[in-house]
Image (cartoon, rainbow, N blue to C red; front, side, top):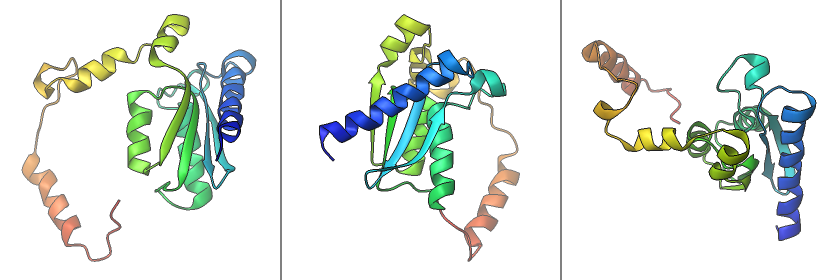
Amino acid sequence: MDTADHEKFIRRAIELSARASLEYCTGGVFGAVIVRDGKIVAEGMNRVVASHDPTWHAEMEAIRLACITLQSFKLKGCTLYTSAEPCPMCLATCYWAEIDQVFYGASVDDAFEYGQFDDRPIYQELALPREQRKIPLKQMLREEAVEIWKQYQAKPDKIHY
């Protein structure tokens, strides 16, 4: 694809961000589209406020819908276009889904400056050792949990992802 194609798709993501934040008021200034072979496979808007769901980001919605449309939990061959740089959750989901590349409009710093959306502390937290993070992670009943993993490992028809 050439620059004009990429611009067309990022513009669509920006349009969706305007709908989400200014028209429908479903959430923040975030829109996203998933493209494969030059065609939009799925679109998403931020719906955090309307859904009372902190995970309902535009990228998450677009990824979920693309997976349903393509009947796959892997999005190899797909590109994400998003109105703003993905947060840690959405970026991690891009890795899980094996999205090929991401194009974004506004940066993390822009989202903070103009909307007080600040992902920087989350990135900083994730870089810390577990024991230094604000949300404690405490392991319990490891043996019981690992037993299920062992059974899963032995399962001949498991679907690895």
